[in-house]
Image (tube, rainbow, N blue to C red):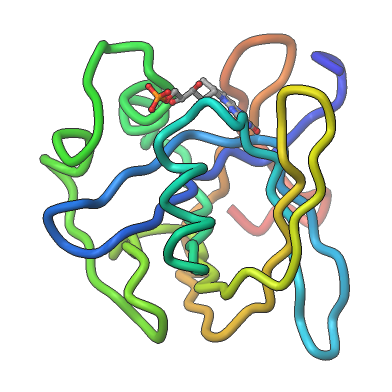
Length: 156
Ligand SMILES: Cc1cc2nc3c(=O)[nH]c(=O)nc-3n(C[C@H](O)[C@H](O)[C@H](O)COP(=O)(O)O)c2cc1C
């Protein structure tokens, strides 16, 4: 799987003061009409409990230059919970889940179902609202390292 390029996202949930989130590459679109996506979340994470308690989550697609934020929410800096949100600007759209203001794209979702597979839950969400900043180049992850995606058409 390390050779399958993936987009880097931060999955967030919870109200102000009780926010949490984690870096995720296991994110995938499911259906377009109505729009649904899925996230695979380790069941041991606090964010996993918050998502199932609130019934909401957001997927924030990171852009090139936001590697430090990915490390922070990936648990690589030893920073946890609400403290992970410091140093970046957040707002909310429809559900109340934290949306990164300068995310490449963001999807605000309500949980429709979840399926347990070994250590993880596959959480499916219906997209309630979405934003994008198309000028930002999305951040990718490949071979255990961050990577820069360049469309063949050379948009960035
Ligand atoms: C690039 C990257 C991608 C990751 N993708 C996922 C993922 O798709 N699902 C997941 O459950 N954890 C994933 N993780 C691990 C979680 O981000 C990490 O376990 C989490 O931040 C730990 O949070 P906690 O300290 O609240 O338990 C990823 C980490 C990194 C650095």
